[in-house]
Image 1 (cartoon, rainbow, N blue to C red):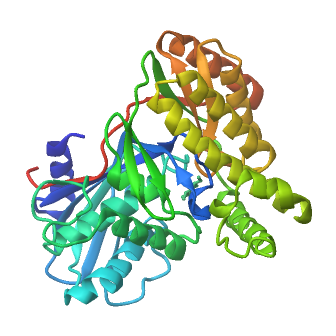
Image 2 (cartoon, rainbow, N blue to C red):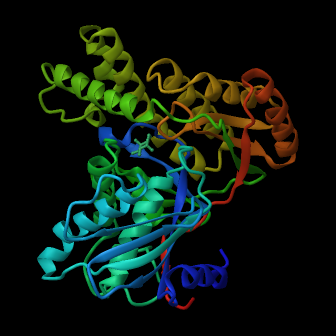
Length: 408
Ligand code: GLA
């Protein structure tokens, strides 16, 4: 990020110098997919690709926005319902603003200020790397800044995300999740905004999505790298099928409660319970529940494998996770399966799986450093041959979570 350049762009557009830059990263989930909304475990990392909001406070209740990368400008008032012709990306900011006012500022007797904001970034949009959570997180930090609640350079690495106030990062994450649920219509879980806020370079976040307790686990990748491959397939089914999976899991819990009345989510179901009662579940529900229960166990095993620096076991768990997502949870797609298959048949690849919601987007691969070139070459030639689509490949650096900078 070139701060001077961003400041210049802001001035070109809004005629003044900006006050701050709020930056929030995308993420790649290493294992623990579709477990967050089942109260389970996830294990994501923040990547060193960010959405930046360059902003300044306005003295009225107007929000003026310019999205640099798509060259779109719009504005809305914090006092009235938004005009339905606004671009879709502005819904995330609108959602965050309204929820921040209702859930946080109201209790403090504060009113949200308007702002002028320039938005830009390098998280690939709609690729399953959480560009929308990054936008929500950057938005919440920006609105807190224009209200004077964050006044110094701040990285969100503590339980007190906001200076002088006890607003834990997990509360801000829940607010962003709700914005996505209510303003983008995706019933997503808590993982994406949490890692965007709490990521730490060279660490993965082991998050319990029920208690919201978390641990930063150092990633000793030794002679391997994490490589992300983008199918470049638009995730058209993602939101409708996503909401359907969530409902299927809830149905499983409802049926299983007949025998296990104490359970409230699939997190509470053990592999043994499932074996005992799975015949009572409709076939599809059975597959969905099996996947979630097994995936939760895989996350715990993956964390202990990484802690003892056992990358082979970690790689096997990644492969098993993909198989479950493909066959039981059925959220993969032809192109994700092809990328995974190419990876799993290349020497030096320890593990490969789809990452994120599925139906397109990206795979994450654990690859020996000296095999990365060969692996990339195979993906670049074989994948287009079999799909007629060009992939993108990014070697992933594990970055830090969100931050605000005032000295631009
Ligand atoms: C999307 C959602 C997350 C999570 C993943 C699947 O990224 O936003 O909450 O459910 O899908 O693991």
